[in-house]
Length: 296
Length: 239
Ligand SMILES: Nc1ncnc2c1ncn2[C@@H]1O[C@H](COP(=O)(O)OP(=O)(O)O)[C@@H](O)[C@H]1O
Ligand SMILES: [Mg+2]
Image (tube, rainbow over all chains, first blue to last red; front, side, top):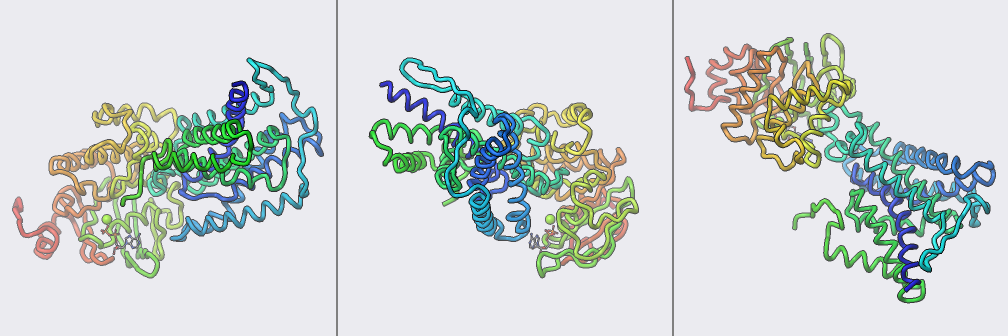
């Protein structure tokens, strides 16, 4: 019973990181109907640069975390300018953008390898002071709580920003209809660039939190989360922010529950993706999908 | 206020508008009429800037705006209410109105929304509803109100009566008359040529991407060629 409770709690922690990663992914999709397949590479570079800032530059994590997040946002601007903006007027821009974002991912992965080396790294001991609590036989660390809080806070801020702020509404307007946005006086290409900035910043933040949680980062860490992130946004409903949060939690939970029930981690991914298919059978547009389905 | 000189606009190799010239004086209502596919929407889109001009010049208050970005043109006061309305279906009625005032100073917006809701009570009633849930007529009211929220100096109105019930169409033309009485400059595109000419001082007839006729609205209304081609047979002219 305790093991189950422990796994549920762990699922919540990792699920919040998946959610944060997926929220950034789905934001770009929701606005532009395109997948930015370099998102996982930004996640990796965000995490690795935070380690570098703490280790080599001697910064506190409280400074390194926001800096790495901003840096990741900058990568988002670069992705937009190099991989998407030049193709935007093409009729096949969704497909060609997809391919050029894969090219960006390859370049970023190579940069990660060149800059940070192939070995896995970790934040130096004592980067975050960790308290360990035992509550009803369940072990929770202050680090884990901090991760959930930061991830939740970022997702909450994003949601409020999109709902309430002038720029957030402009982002939603571009998502609704680019032509209408232009006619209303929205600087559409500026808003698109900004959307990439936020999306990638959140992806980079997720990379830092992921690295802190697993206490290990490597240039290929994006692989592990890439497909999960896609699964999560499909699960949540493409383009839906709350859907991505919920999908992230559902995915995290189904992963750890599989481990708890089967006693091994071999089945973890298989079951998580099976759950994905099962949910999509019941709700083809995803948990919170906009319900728009292709007409038969 | 607006002068368009030898405008050519193309989609790929197809020239949808060819060397078209027209002008709109301040305070006037000018209409662009003609059959489906004539290039009226394309010409309007070039004025608002959402489609680039291939050749020719567009002057607004004497300034060349041919290469100006669409959002800057909105700041200059060129506001288009597009064909098909393009309301933001997944956003609330109020948010649609707010977005209409996107380029205006924030402190003015609430009062403007109040005025707009007083003019169009249905928009106050449905303030919190998603725009996509409104009826076609209500969406057209919203599109007009949203356009007016930008405080247009030149209003580009594209087929405001398209696909609407006769009662709503009458309402729309009432609004146009009201705007005209208030001194609003309007460039109106309509397939409903008879009603468009009735509210206009001047009109251009387009066909196959060219302006084929132009003149004061009254003289076009009484021109036999125009009557037979554009105003239909069932003429019950008031003269
Ligand atoms: N996005 C587009 N791509 C290619 N051709 C277009 C496009 N929009 C309009 N056209 C063509 O341009 C011509 C003019 O269209 P349009 O300006 O919409 O005419 P109107 O508004 O007078 O009905 C038509 O032949 C139409 O088929
Ligand atoms: Mg048209």
